Length: 323
Ligand code: GLV
Image (cartoon, rainbow, N blue to C red):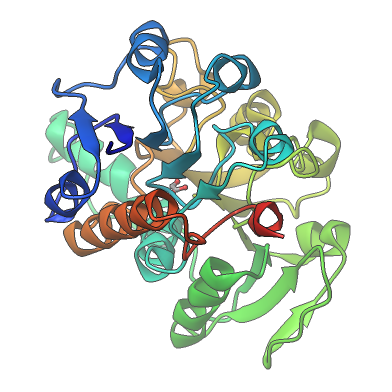
């Protein structure tokens, strides 16, 4: 008998057709995400789950699914899955690294440029009818910050961090980075995090959200950031103390920020970042190009198909389950 797999969203590309050939497939049909309650119901008796980063696969859900054999997420980050609980049961968790590197680096750089040059603020200014004969070009009209010659501090020099560094080199930026493990990249000075914060004009965050990186940019560390710096986050919201960031932006200690990821998604209406003119906000779209989303879907399907065949997933977060 074929194994059963639940997919929590429609996927782009041909992946679902391939998956349907090797399992009993059920795909969540609605255009919006499945609720946690309905996901629990759909998962009952299911062998495999192909999920999104919006689905919370926690310890209690995993414990309630004795038949579960694998989870494959269409995301590189897996902080929405209790990987420890999966590993304890020797169940693999798949993810989609690599394919979204350049697209996410593009998003980080778009936010960096937009924040530096006040692009979103300028757009709002025109749309709100404020560009009037008494409010036009002048020496200090919408002045921002230059990238050329400025120092970019990259927190987390993995593949996305390195891709951001390549872009920054083209803009004539100096590069420093901090990384948990020893790493050496020509042209990038590796610094302790505190030194990076104190010496960078721009900072871009590229670490995964784990127990070690939660609140990495705490209020105390935000206080160490060089006055007037610009902060960009395309990694995960929980890495930065959002209230402390909003305060630093309000006080003018930081000149601007570009933020794609939030402690709570979707953002709540009382999030203080919403009221700040010097913040560019995007709704978690780091990997959102058509080509990349197709590739991510294909990888998530390939991980699921391997697991169904009893083979090792090509991209497994917890490969120790196979030994
Ligand atoms: C996006 O945030 C991802 O983890 O793929």
